[in-house]
Image (cartoon, rainbow, N blue to C red; front, side):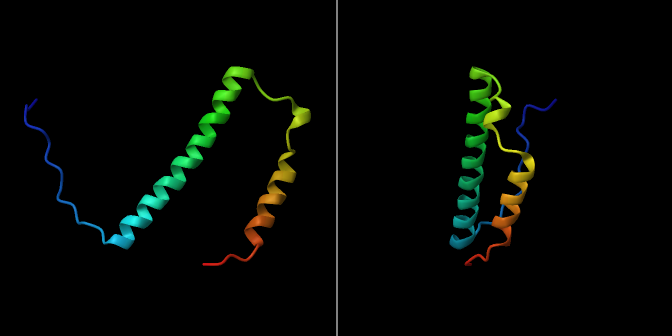
Length: 74
């Protein structure tokens, strides 16, 4: 095996707007992962929530579909 580090292909820089968009997307994804991690940590520490305190999947689905159908401002 070679002791030389592998060479990375040259990269093309992003313009300011594209870089800002990528950073915003990364921050959004990081926030979603943080929420998931906190839920999993809570389950690990306290066990599963009781079924009586949960939301039926049909209700969650319908609420999500309703949010998707609402008009959005670009």
